Image (tube, rainbow, N blue to C red; front, top):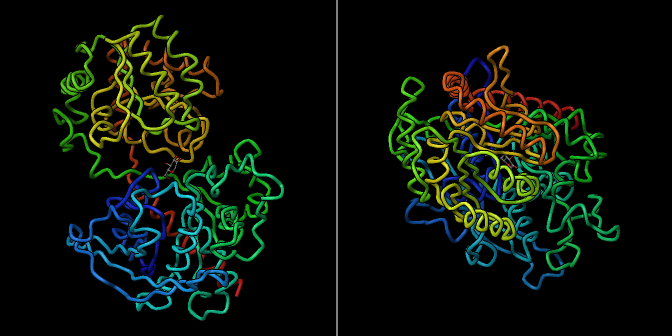
Length: 498
Ligand code: NHF
């Protein structure tokens, strides 16, 4: 790393791959620290020790005993004691810490979705801070991500403000998805339940605890706020995307930055990916047909040898991802043009029923899979011609970058990180890496798919498009360098405020 001194960085998060991953956050908590380590920094990650994290498989060892977390005056137990376990990657790939707690983490099968989730995240925040106090290894910067860890900057600003160690450590608060702010829908919170963020974090057993807005508190008290793409950083300043926090974000605008996520290009590589039927590169694109055939077989569809446009979709089935506009147009598009549609996703049962009915209507053209299988997204990237991402909003989005790496062309809405990573195809200039539409409506989405399916018939042009997409660099290195700048800025701001 050029001249700047090594930084010690502690990421605190609710999930981190490969130990526990529910969504994109977990992926970033693996890939970003890894990229920072490759730049010479000491980046470590702390998450809860959930029951699903196998102590034996990962050879977890005790790092520190008796981390004490105060639960508040009303709690009959008063103080919860827990341990921090340590994982050291045998290949020198960094350290992960795990905060143990039998009641709140170990006994739970899932990461999210409990009626006492807020308490679970306050324990994580307090546990992380108590750990830093006791540990020999002290970070120069803490990175807290999303509402679950917004209590960290809040506590450092209040309960821990006189602590000689913690008060010196700047905090970067990362927004991966502004929609989720606590255990409530920010759009439908009543005035009475609104958390302005000033009041002291309530005791665990106070009914107000569940109404605490971890996202707002994170934004209010962090030294630097960042989100996962430059466009989303601008969008969240508006009422349309601000999820009720746009005023606050505008007040803190000089501390708000956007850095586009990257992807793990080592693991996501069509030349070596073991989940593909055949490996290929930008120089051997014709081999992709074999992957397409394997994909079609997997989903019980007839093989089409490149005659039929194959469109895939991967990810959470919820409103954010554009399923409301998609389900308004897909059936009539299928009536009018010939293409195959394959969907892999979990979520909203209403959307699931829609696709099941569509499959009944078009059994030779629709493929579905509604539970998590890590192989299937890669099979889609390696075998489908295009992938659909018509999101209503998208902080960064990873799927479009992952798909491009495999030559699978993204059809996306011009929003958030999608706008920052996919350039619209322009026939005149032979530019672009995908198909981009602007307005969030079924008609605009329809046009984008039709544009793509038309170009697909011009095989030479389509191949050029694939090559442009495949050679785009979405590795983490550049983004990790941007993060280092944010850390340095946070250190400066924090010093100035002391
Ligand atoms: O990629 C990881 C992910 C983003 O756009 C995605 C999202 C949640 O909605 O940063 O976080």
